[in-house]
Length: 441
Image 1 (cartoon, helix red, strand yellow):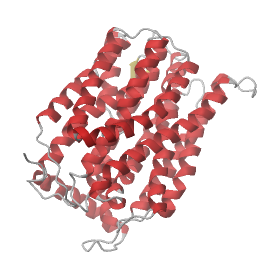
Image 2 (tube, helix red, strand yellow):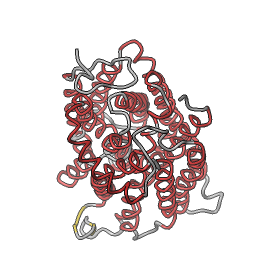
Image 3 (cartoon, one colour):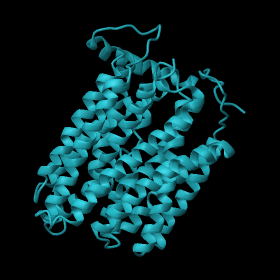
Image 4 (spheres, helix red, strand yellow):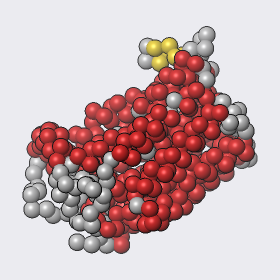
C-alpha cells in the first residue's frame, strides 16, 4: 500500500525534529561548553570523571562512548520489541519525548556541573538512538523498493535544513546575547535547551500520521509483556538467521567502521576547532550553520551520482575522499579559511554518505524485521558511534595532541572502505530480497 503524502511528510519531519539535537547539542555547543566548565574544575590538569582522573578534553568523547555502549546492549532489544509488538509509533513517541525532555534540562548545566552534563548527554543520546532505530524502520513501510534512495535522501536533506534553521536562531541569540541581557553561558544553555523543545514540538506530526507496523499476516496484536519476551526470542532467531543474509552483514560490518569515522568527525569537529585551532564559538556556529544547508545539497547530489555510478561505487568514492579529509586535517589544517573550506567538503560528503548507506541497507534486510536490523544499524548511526570518540579521547589523553587524536579516525575509513571494496554487491530490482543469493555477481 502506498503511503499518503501526510505520512511521508510526517516521516521527513521527524528527521527535521531530531536533527536539532545532532546539530545544536552534539555537533556544536555541548562539546566546547562541557569542556570549558570541566576545565574550571581541573586539579593538576585533570578532573574526576566517575572515579577516573582524566583531562577535561576527554570528557565529551568518553560520555559519547558510554552512551553508545549502553545502546549496544539496549538497541537490539528495542528493535525486537518494535517489530514484535506492532507499536512502533508508540515507542517512537516514548523515546522522542523522553530525549527531548532530557535535552531541555541542559538549561541548568552551569559551572561545576560537568558530571550533571555528562549524565544528561549519556541518556539523551541513548533515547536519541532508540528513537532513530524506530524511525528508520518506517522507511520500508512508507516507500517501495525503487523509491528508497529518493525517500531516504529527502529525509536526510529535510533533517539538515531543519537543524540549520534552528541553528540560525541559536546564532542570533549567541551573537547578540548582550543586547538580550544574557551572559554568554546563559545564551549557550538556552540554545542547548531549545534543541529539546524543537525536537519535541516537530515530533508531533510523526506521532499523529505514521502508521504502526502495517498489517502483516504473521503479526497479531498481543500484550506488551509478550512483546518484550518475544523480542528476546526474535533477537536470537535474527542472529541465527543472519547467515542467510551474508551481504547484509558484510555491508553492516563495513558501515560499522566507516560511519564511526563519519560520526566522529561530525561530533568532534567543533571541539577540534576550538581547542586545536583556537577558533571562536561564534565562527564555529556560522560554519556549522553553512554545513547544514550544504549537507542537504550533498544528499541530493549523491543521490543523482548513484544513478550514474551505482550505490556501492559512489560510497567507495566518498570513503576515499573522507580519508583525504582526515589526512589534511592532521597535516595541513591551520586557520579559519582552511577550516571553512574543509567543512564545506565534509558537508557534501556526510549528507551523501549517510543517505545512500541507509537506503542501501534497507534493501538488504528481511521484511518484518526492519526495526531489529535497524537497531544494529543505529549503533553506528549519527552522533552514536563509540569506537571513534573513544579512540579520539584515548589518543588525546596519551598524547595531549588533538591532531594525533583526529588522525586516529583514519583507520575507521580505511578498514570500512576495504571491506566495502571487496564485497560483491549487486542490487536486484525486487521488492523482497531472497536469502543467501541476495547479492551475487
